[in-house]
Image 1 (cartoon, rainbow, N blue to C red):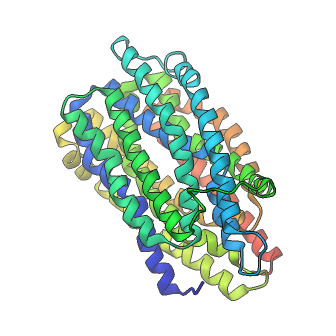
Image 2: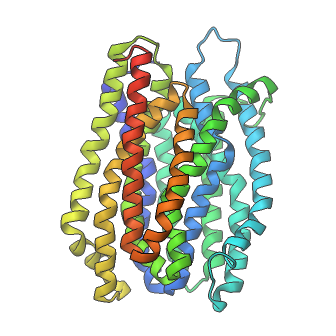
Length: 435
């Protein structure tokens, strides 16, 4: 496939649009949800969103493994795209169904034993968990098909599919809440949107690679190859979001759902801009994978481009939250009738989180480079160590300092991660003669 800076920029625009749509949907919908739902119900809904997003990661890294494998194939390879995709689809289906069956008892332990649920939300929470579990297989398969289209650099169609469905992920629940529907119906609406996304991805992937999706071909040899790479990614994929969202659950367990809702509001506003880094990674990962050892010019250009794209977009966002946070949140959340103390809490948390946003976003580039160059075990080991450290310092900080403490733990974790990932990437660039 031909490549150029202009083509990468265009692909980045498509990728950013597709991944940024949920952020726009959240911006439009959160005021309505805050207005229509009780603080406890809204706090619970934000945790459902976290779990639904997290559930897509149980596909054992198949999505990114497929993207890497397809990017490495050439016309002379005896391995076919159909066997790679088919193996991933069959495996993801089994994984999704098994995980869905495990979700119901596990989530009932989390919501009820670890996190106290108000009596009036018990029945609603129980029904919502069923809908969340039913969404898991859909999420897993969608992750694999997204990897297929990213490997084929089909970012235009990905944007066409993801933008409306990404908006709907938040707009549909807000519309249902406005009409008076309860939490289970809101979660069911999210599931329907995810199902539509899956069907559209499947149709497009089948068009690009005929018979690869609707007549998947299973190849045991490919399964081993995909799992050997994807398995390490899964460790990072499981622990990474835990490090991002665990503070929210700690806050809910120590200070209650209402306090967690304040933090979630600031966090969702800030964290959604990580889609910028995710969009850059989606464009760069297949290209990092396809680099030939010793190709210094291409490696340096791609690595520099990735970092500049992220920095150029993220730093202005962080400055807006730091310098104009109070104005932003007071106008955005005006209909929610928040008291002044709550508004100050949200604004302060967002300012702290925005610093972590810059560091976390930048760290996406060296992490993608490390994984694409065949060292996913490095990032997996780093995330395991980070989680161990986080579990030591985060609970006491969150317990004593509440919302601001939770924001600080995320900043601390992002700082450590960024420093270590850039050091690891520098080592690989030297070893593979890229610098």
